[in-house]
Image 1 (cartoon, one colour):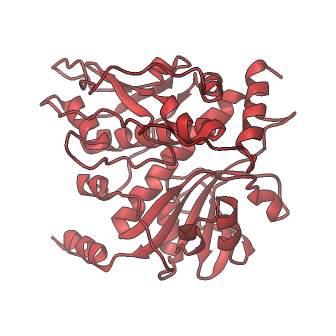
Image 2 (cartoon, one colour):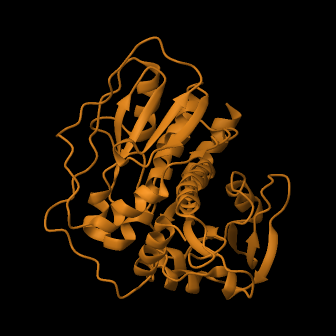
Image 3 (cartoon, helix red, strand yellow):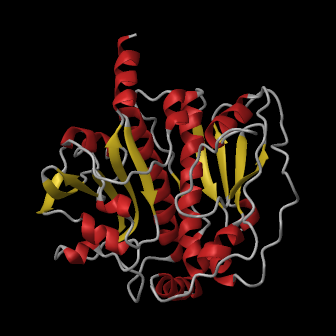
Length: 360
C-alpha cells in the first residue's frame, strides 16, 4: 500500500466517524470571487456556467463552502483551483470529499455551458498541485486573449491547522477524465434554472420514465430509489435499457439516517445515488481512483440536476454520507454511497413552461 492509499484510508476512517468533531469557523467563510464576462467566447462560457458579478451563483455547492475558483482563462482553456481550506474550516476531515464533489459540479457546469455555446471539450486534466487543480481545454481556440476574472482579494494561503484535506487532495488528484456528452434538448435557460431546492413534505412520486431520464448520463452501477412502486434499481449505463430492479421497499428513512437525518431525503420523490464499489482498506482502490470517483460523482450529480430542472422537478445534491454501504444493506457486494441527488415536489408552472416552449 502506497503512502497515498494509507493516507486515504486514515482520512476516510476519520471522515466516516460520526463522533469526529466538526469545528465551527471563527470568521465568515470567504466566497469565490465573481467577475463580469467580457465579449470573448470562453469568458462567456465560464460566466454562464459559474455566474457573473452581481448574479446568483449558478453552481450550488455539493456540500462544501464554495472551494472552486477560476484561476486563469487562456486562449483555449480555463484553469479551476481549489481553496480547500474554506471547506476544511467547517467540515474538518470530511472536507476533502466535499471539495472533490464540488469541483466535479464546477467542471460539469463548464462542460455543459461549452456544449450550449458550440465549443467542444478536448481534454479535462487534474493536477496534484492545488494551485492548478484542473484545466479544461477546448477544441476551438478563441481569437481574443483574456487573462481571467479579477479576484476580489489576493488568494489566502492555506492555514496550518487543516492539513488532512490538503494532503488527501494532493494524493487524490493528477488524472484525466473523459468529457461528458451533451444532454439532448438542453438550453441556456435550463442551465440558469438549475437550483438546489428545498421542501418540507413529500410530493408526488417520480414516474419510472422521469427517473430513467435522470439516469441517462450515469454509468452502470449507480442506484435509483423509485417511490412508486417502492423499489431500488440499478442503472444499466445505457439510455435505451430499463432500470434493473435490485430489491423492493422504501429506503428513504435509512438513506436519511445515513446522511444526518436530512428531511428532504426522507420525503423525496425519488433519489439517484452514486456509489463506490469497494471501501478503502487492504483491497481499496488507489487514492487517484477514489478521487476520480468522487469528482465524477459531482459531474454526474450536476447532469441529474439539470435533467430534473428541464422536467420541472425540484432537486438537491446530498453529500456527507456516513457509513452508508447500500450494497451490503441489500445483501450484495459492498457499495459505499459517495453522493446522491434527491428530487422533491414538481413545479406545475415549470412543467407548463416546458410544454409551451416545446410547442413554440
